[in-house]
Image (tube, rainbow, N blue to C red; front, side):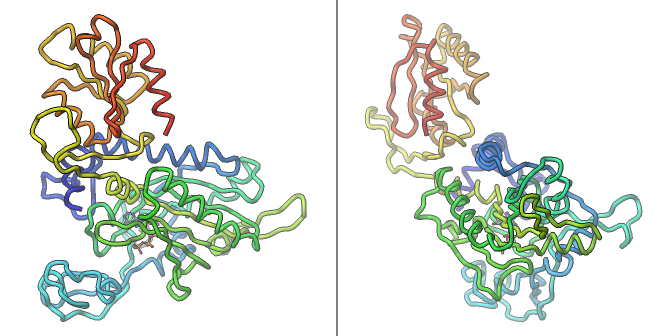
Length: 451
Ligand code: ATP
């Protein structure tokens, strides 16, 4: 994990938030490459689940909602974790994580129920700690003006169910999708971005006829897993975990997590829940508004069941980095005698790689070559996210691009000046081919689409 953290910082993927002030726990900023990578993941998700499907539409709801939403949804009552405090050093932990031994090996914790900070075993009894961040609406900071930052995007898809269905003339089954910021005041953090206090969630609320829910639930588990594998995560690093009946969330009839084999162990990457008609029924009760669906064909009226696949984009991005990271002892180059140092190759899927094409003049000190390289760069820029780099030996520059997962490097050399062609180097195979500059855009487009 420390290698991923170091690469992320060194190469501009992820920084600690407010680092110059000593940082702030469990909050992260995405740097230039991390932001591009994150956007590409979101783009893939939107393409697959909104653009390519006829039955899912997108919304973008507000982060702060009417506080009654959270009463109705059960979050004010149930969205809490059991908290214990070490009586000796006042560190706080999740009681369930402590009891099942997750802290063993961290700091001074050698066994279950031992404080990682001081090794103490003297804890307060556990009390429920609500994970929702509080804020106030308007200038008066009292309980009646209290509001919450959403801990999931789902609720605005429920409160907008009728408006979306009617305005888009949708028939069940259909889904509402949303990607957006969510906030959880997590008690225990750590493991880099895995458990952050602010993160992006990509969720779908898929409304179905009661009775069809179990079959459609299975379909979504498969769809969701296919999407993750399609982004390049190795199948052997994924497994499914079925929640036990007694451990299900208050709204769920069935939940399956897809877990990823992170360096710190198998952990939840994403979850799919059968939320039944719980949320729509609750909102109907609390708002006094009818949220049932009327089927024009069968003349049936019912409150739909909801299947919810829910995916943390930041967690997926972390898993993708871990999965793509490869160290090659002694380097991959066999053609040069240069020092064989360890190389890092980020084997990211081309679709999500932050930089698609690097443009590299063979040498920096020949003006004709750098001028031509800059022309090629300008030619490619409107079509692909490109990076121009002329600093250091060509081998070193290839390695810099390999380390950030750039699929293709274009090199402009002496031959280019005579023949108007360049080499394209493939990061994964390291093979080079010469192509005419006039064909470059089409060839690159084809290579990038052909994943
Ligand atoms: P946990 O039990 O680990 O606290 P959870 O079961 O409460 O998690 P869900 O409510 O199922 O999590 O959240 C849906 C998805 O949101 C998760 O599968 C994960 O991808 C993401 N997620 C949840 N909490 C966080 C967080 N603190 N930081 C980053 N991503 C998160």
